[in-house]
Image 1 (cartoon, rainbow, N blue to C red):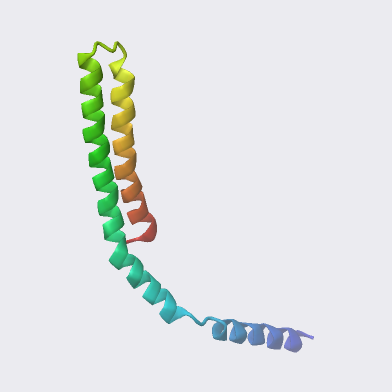
Image 2 (spheres, one colour):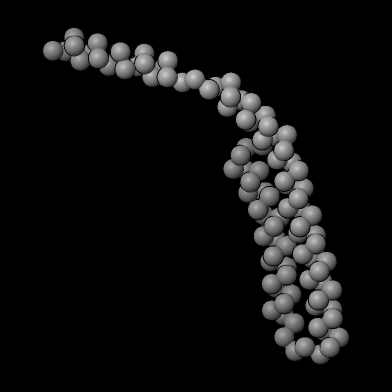
Length: 97
């Protein structure tokens, strides 16, 4: 009984080792991700800069018009830009690039 159990386990281990095709494809996908990821990181930084500039213009306009609650707008635009920066950093950390 034990010999049959051991033979069965060894047979499963052997089939698991043979059932792993695609290592080359995984390496190729990783290389493609590395080549395109930095443009995505740059895109997140560009979007953060655009959020900052548009937010600054809108806040300045509303400030000159006498809008009383500028603080909420400043925080909203600031955290939108920070979120975009952190999203790029998070993706970099998750994919290990």
